[in-house]
Image 1: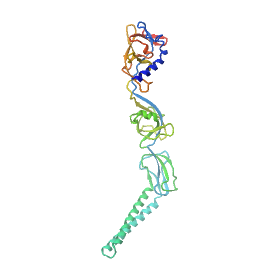
Image 2: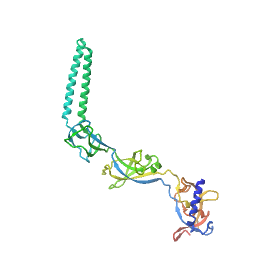
Image 3: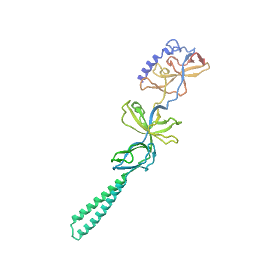
Image 4: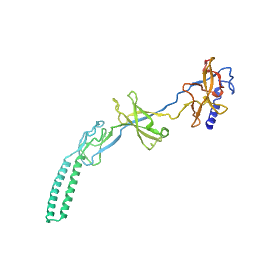
Length: 357
């Protein structure tokens, strides 16, 4: 409280010359004659603080698609900028070599199964050793593994869309030989549209949990705003400006095609945690007993009179003052309240005109 009082004394001393229109000396004006005062209406408490940022539409994921096996690329149906559904055929290698490999593996497995059956029969008759039967069983198992690998290779020779996607770039060319792992297509995962923007470190530290912030997006060519939902933020700052990248989810909107890279304006509405009403320092007076008061205008038969009302003043930094104890809409003396005596007749000062005298 002592810190708040000292801050108010310093600030109010700076406003003494500005209150010269209220009276000519530093003593309170006589009770009999009205003095002209600048007034203001107490504003309602600020519920939210809104800030504006510039962001871009982004995909949920961007992946490069490739074959796990090598071969001749015979089919590449995906067109750049096309939207494809999950499971749609995108690319395919020449399947003939893989089909023949499956047939060879099937024949080999059938042969090893016959060899295993014969070796077991001979072992039971003591014609052959049990070791030979065990070797035949191992050969059968290896043939079974080879068949599964051949079938997997045949399946890997075809690429289908792993999710609802937008074809961003076609990296391969049809009728060319491709190596395993060589990128063929770049896909944007559009199962959920994201909006990303950079939030400065100092703002992120003040808002606390981003999930409590209300986000809306505004797009060029679209009337109104759309709600955005917080999803995640990148927990490392960018190289410039010490900013964190926040990612928001945008719902689908009829008639609005949101493609990755499209710019948008993000409005962030942060709940105001502070209670009370912010008033200028010149509207707060300190009484001899240390009480903080505000001069409130009350209507009388002859005009208006100022009545000092006790208020509670809080300040976190010594320059901003939050006042509690006043109803929104109350008319108070905005400048030089410390020069107005309790019950002093006053008149509104509005430039060269006078009201209420």
